[in-house]
Length: 457
Image (cartoon, rainbow, N blue to C red; front, side, top):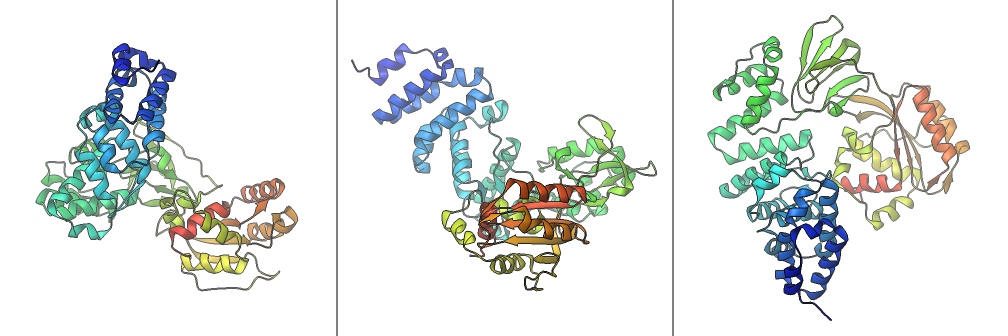
């Protein structure tokens, strides 16, 4: 006997959906029937269980729904999800998976989505269960947008930041600065100037704008130290995208503050000092770092070791490409060492091409690699292994790595497009770490993402 959807919902209580298996069966039945009104009903019916259970349950629910309707157009997604709390969660999950980068082309989709959700306050209250974050990367072209659209874009960006859905980076903060500047309102222009002052380490301008909003005067570094938490609260009230996490500090010979707030530290002389957002200082001059969460100082250990490709400033655009295309992977796997080198040099804007020979230290020996930011220029050696190396061995690799480790390079980068033996990879890592070198390993998928990001193909 076949049970219709209306009868099914009359038999089910909200608590019944604590059983995830039951939810799956109900969802499968509704999707098979094609009844959109029933789909909306189940989104409302599951609300109790969705809120009563933890993030693991919520994530499973959203992923299950997403698997069923991920190919629907945005209009249909909003029609079934706008008027329920679980539907609002699903709509945010859908748009963040569909468009992982917010730029001039995708911003309107985010605005359309946010404008149609009726439970935004509740979503902010209960938080979002996903750890995947969206990149906010807006260029100067947004100044040409309609003022009403800019206002909506500003609200959308602030909401996503509050929900912790935005990837926190300088690019995100710069995008906020552009939005504030583009709206043209006096308050937003001041907000834009406040961000610029922090970027430029202009304490005088920062203090001038902050006092305009009723904040404390900070004419000296001591004022920043004395009002450390008060300034944070003022910036939050102004809806600036301030953030600080000790995980965003990097220690490659320098300490780099990849946070949009001040780093407080003690020098080797014991005197407290301030490091501006996205600024760096020699690690040898630092004794301890202040943790604002624990409210205490701690001593950092300088770290050498693996650098992720997208965290290298010269290759930072790689993070905009989540998955490489099959065509890009096929292309890089067919490249010779010279072809790989030429394309990497193009990205680095390094014209010094050297032919491969036994006397060369590495295939690319460059001083054009930026690591933490545009001020952090390093010597790097790049070892590339193209299509002729079908299964890279220690014998084929180690002699080059040894040369690189005994050279002045600070970073050793290994690029290969086919397979590599475990022994060869382990030998590479051990040599780099023994000689206190930073290193990066780029396989065919990472290389394809790199070349796609910089439109090399």
